Length: 262
Picture 1 (cartoon, rainbow, N blue to C red):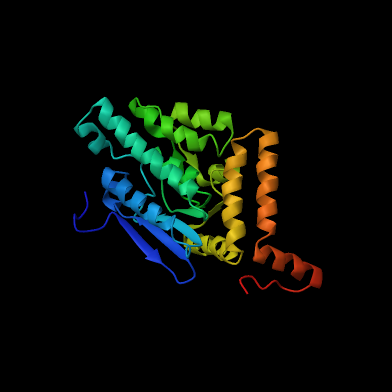
Picture 2 (cartoon, rainbow, N blue to C red):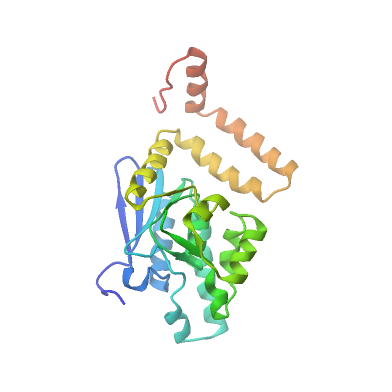
């Protein structure tokens, strides 16, 4: 459903360390076929080793953000082994987004369904056009969105997540914001400006603090309170030894603007 010579994933880099991934299968509603998943994994693996990266923006071409897995590809050669491999491949991509030491922002301009909704939930932050809609719609076709439920249930309340999973019904961008699936819902013409506000705010912060903070944020959520506090105090103590943190505290004492990276 797309030109075979056209890359399924476009990558743009800015000098300030912002990398934008654009899902580029618009005629297929940016469905996650094996080729697109592989391209995403390759780029994520490279970024994990790139100290110059500060923020990743995940965008999409066309009317849809992502319609989930490519059902035509999935149906072509059904076997348990194939499906296990495919969902393992997708799960690795999703976890790689979380393991990146920089924030990942989903720029959602259209519908996000099934694994596409999972992709939004897996990103650290999300800004959506107010016309975007979200669903875990697999159940409508006899397939419970099991892997999307992992990310979804870690973003919104259990009852709200379960309702989406068992009904397959769409929620609006305003509902998604109210439930915590996205941070902002804005008119489409304001989408890029709203994403840029988050990007600029993050890039202005010390890189070490953001990286250590992101890692701690997800670790502590999965732990009990005592273990979470132990991890958090060790992280904060180590962060405090970073030059930018020491400069920031001194700037506060001196009542001046901090000079990070100086």
